[in-house]
Length: 492
Image (cartoon, rainbow, N blue to C red; front, side):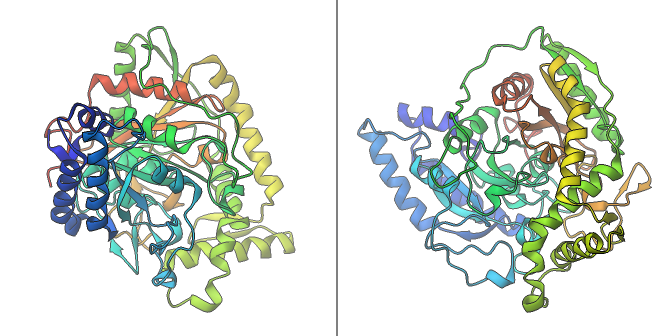
């Protein structure tokens, strides 16, 4: 295996055994990044000289066998370009913030830095993380290293592309509608959407119960390692919950587990290749000794799509709407469209008449109360399933990926020959579990599609039962680890 694909867990072991050093790993990562980033455009800022200096300090600690070795000591870490690090640029993928320098470090990043990880780069994101692909006016198009014609997903697309191409060891993501899990699926990675409140984050979005921050990695062990650094209550985040939950680094088998699966969550049109790879994943779980049973989930497409966007319009989209009067020429069309949904929903609520917004394929006019009623109705349907089975699995996306430069307002999203009415939501199957935000969800690779784009499955657990989804993912991954051979790593 190439050095740049060394997992964090293995690297830490090799550091302690003096068979690999933080300097050697960082050099390999930087060399790989300098070769690959011009193709993928995963990084918008790099700090290679500073990272090498920090790697030398970490190397010295391992060389001297110092007792204060930190959990992620010397591990290369890429941070999504929406999270503040004091003194560093942070554009949020927007021309509006092209000269912005952060005045403080966000709480989740603070924990990562305090764990000994070394930030060598920032990763691209669509403007204000508003969509499921990654391109922007300020940074251009980010591409999937498995097939450069396609998107790595979004909004944590730069993190996904960097991990898959060996340009970082670990990376951060955020997830308000699938933004960790979508790129994890499209790039053949492991990504964890923690339950709301598990990982502290910065105000005001810590008060948005759809929104979480979490780890992205190439292995389940690495994802758990990083999650243990990020999780736990924090004095700066009133929504963070006690006590801190630690994910074990080893797990028992899942023999005799009862696993439920749904191919479509009751309403998604799912690509045939996604279905085939999901069925193959089901067989692997059976080979591990689990019983797998199909379940029916009676969720309604329009009800969930409308709920998701109406909820956004009250909180997330309002933030964008406030920028439009002064910065309309700088905003991307997709961000403006997203922001306008806030105005449309307000107009609909005041007139007490529903308004259909054609570009999004969404009917507006739902209050937060109505959105939460739908969430309650969804959980009434899902709760008996979750409490009958150990975990639920379903595809992460309904299509392997869309084109890298997609214009979501003009281009069609076609699945199984059918044009999708709400294109940004139709190809991803992640957002229902942002509506049900207390459920832990782990995305793991399920296979490759014919265009060489990876596919993934979501492992969904009971509320706040994170360990079980990691246990299922850990055992599943052992059947066929990725990035150990040329077949299961991108040829770039």
